[in-house]
Image (cartoon, rainbow, N blue to C red; front, side):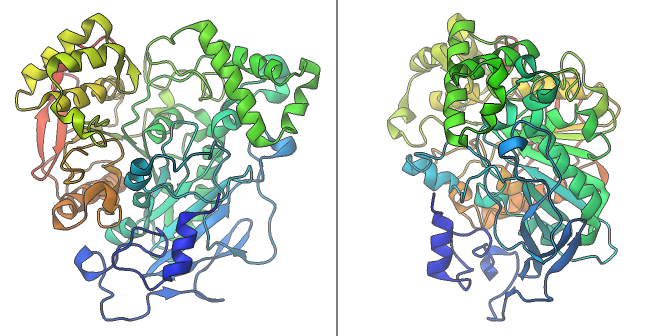
Length: 564
């Protein structure tokens, strides 16, 4: 698929740096009004040349570019091509290169269904998708840094994108850009692409034996390989390999919780941040092995022909695997609460020994402090449907009977749940109550309760800031908080509207994040004093124009929800 971003850069050139919603590499918000860096004098801001942005890695030299005093290195290989005989296998190290590697453009996105990716015009506008070529040669990462090999030990951020375990990439949204956080906090920022969906999580161990023992979790093992690359190389980019924070949103948040339960990642992770993806459980081994057998059958192969799965074109394979998953799902009925089905990480007893935080937190996470945040609304039903703004409570009760956000419907409990939320939040309209139920904090609290059993502190936030977009119907929706943490509110304009109001909150949130990266405690970054979470009090930082700590602000409403 041809990239909208690439066309934009060719059309506008690198001089369009003040108000653009285009390339997150070249068109970052950088004019004086953004409060980030002043290039209004017209001085040169982009530098690229033979000796300007060159760094060593264990596989060879890489050359990036310098933009507004931040070094960009894009699409660096941390693993080999995953096609052919490497499909379903553990990630392999890349072949060393002799020439300088041109790290000036994003690496390929992992194979995923790209057809109709931009079909929903409003969704494309709001999240401003950034996609380029898609291939199995996707084990690439990006590095943003204020300095190279200067001996300074800067905290390192490793960003894990959302999209469940099926879609997305490391630069999917403009708010994923690391430039502004690097400058703001003097940190190093990395983002990662890894295998997704059926190519990352088809468990063929049950039918293929020991050779395919890792196949159900290779998408997560790719991220471990990326963290090993960070450990071995990031000092050359000004970072501290002994102070690495992993952070992800939605599916990326579940990747964070899963990684903290993987023995192979122990020692590579020092802090963890989970945004709107509080996964406490992974997939079931037995179900995933059965799904692997269904995939072989759907492909028209016998067990002895299983190697032929590595020869099928990736798009054809994804369609085969998805048909198999649909068939098994129909036959199996609804999944038990909290368990993942389809193509997701699985508790295989080795790479992932147990569910990350159920029934007890994984011991591999015992020395990792955690920060957890969700948004007030997650799903805003009326954002693109203004007619839903005036629904009644009775209508909301009918809606959530059948479906409640990302989860199954509430059935006979729908009325009780709606009434409970309306009682706790009497100032909210029915449509707002609907959105709060759709994005309830139950998973956040379950994860925080589990994590609080370990010695390192856990901190909980609730992002409640309301964007002035879509006639105020956008609300504090899924993904909106990301750009606030990364000081990108003037870059991710389609989530914030830009300007001083979101920037003021962003400065405080980014400050808290940098403090957490440095110390494991978010205090001192500009927000009010932020106590660690306890099950008894449910201490929660409510993030808004005026932020404040409240004790479990929706506890009485959540009591009405079915058990997670």
